[in-house]
Image 1: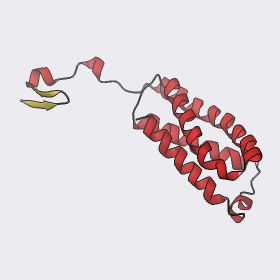
Image 2: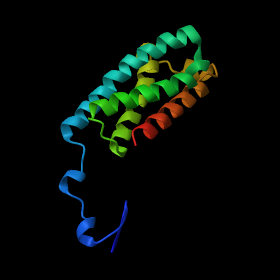
Image 3: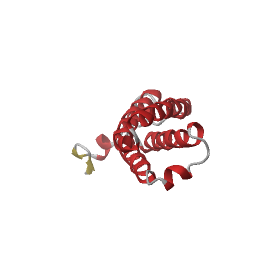
Length: 138
C-alpha cells in the first residue's frame, strides 16, 4: 500500500497519469517574465505618482497592492500555473518594480531616500510585496 494525497492506495492506483504532471512550458515562462518586466515598469510609474501625492508612508499599502497586482499578472501570463517558479518570477517582478521606481524615475541617486529616513519604509514595502506575491502564486 502507498500513501497518497487522498489516502492509502495500491501501488497501481497510486501512479499519476501523464496529464496530472504539469510543468511550466518555456513559452509560458517567457511570457511570465515579460509580463513581470513590463508590468513592473507600469507599476513603477504608478508608485512614483502615488508617492508624490501621498508620501512614502503609504509604501506599506503600495507594497501589498503591488504584490497582488504582480501575482495576478504573472499567473495570467503563465496560464494560471502555480509553483515556486512562478512565485520567484513574480518576486523578481516586484524587485524590478521598486528598482525601476528609484533608479529610472528618481534617478541614480538613491542615497537621498536612504538619508532622509524613508528607506526603511521602502524596504518594508518591498518585503510586503515580495511576501504577498510569493504566497499568492503558490
